[in-house]
Image 1 (cartoon, rainbow, N blue to C red):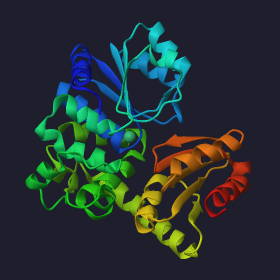
Image 2 (cartoon, helix red, strand yellow):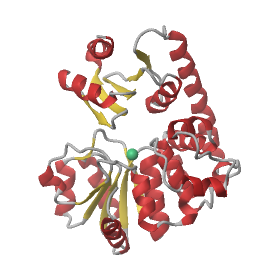
Image 3 (cartoon, rainbow, N blue to C red):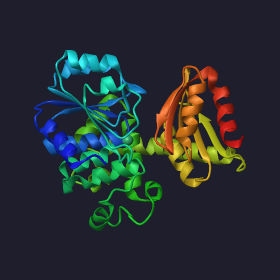
Length: 345
Ligand SMILES: [Mn+2]
């Protein structure tokens, strides 16, 4: 975990900014880290990063549009040189808080206020929560941490305030699939997979929400969000069931591919991995040009790095047991073969 001095530094950087602009990874860890910091200081805008694997220069447009006095990057492993140079040209300080191993060159990272919880790698949400430690944001901190399969040290305290929502005695993986906090992880992840307008109103709602019950209750402000969740949850359950029907139970790899309008490989892979913890789970979303892959299981990172290195145009990375990758579509069969070989021999 990063030190108390570093936590204080982050706090000062936030307090010194009158109009911060946050770029956060497009998942619950990124979102909750942003919400926690934004709610504590009461100002600033937030943008979910859609470019992968790095934060790209297309986002400089947002800076010119919103005119911030400081940039914060949350939960993103890589930032492109062009984006960084663009921020520096505009004379803006940039603070980068993360928990992944980064391939961005040191010389570039040194131009930022860089904070990383590696090697213990507590989620960005956990770091953010520790900056201000506000009790009223603990529910958001729980959602962000469980979303990244991490059991925070305040889980028991949270459970005392809402025993029907959480169980701190189970593993973080089980909590993701068997508690209401886990359900809220999927609700928010699915909520992020919506139109920009709907994501903006969800975020605005979350600036003000008092607790998890505000999120769970269906009313005028949560109607769209609940509807989106119901819609995507149906697709989610269908894909999980299909993957299990197709699986022969013998291979060391549970491989599933699908296509459609929404990519939710990370969610599908999380559930399949929970059901088959001794397997390597590989979930592939096929797009016309490329495939997006989520991998879960022992050695996921080792296998991801090895296989993506061997395939031209492939990128990938993440955590030891949970990774993501992007592969050109014409390498799909080759990718599948390499994965099966890596595990089954
Ligand atoms: Mn994260």
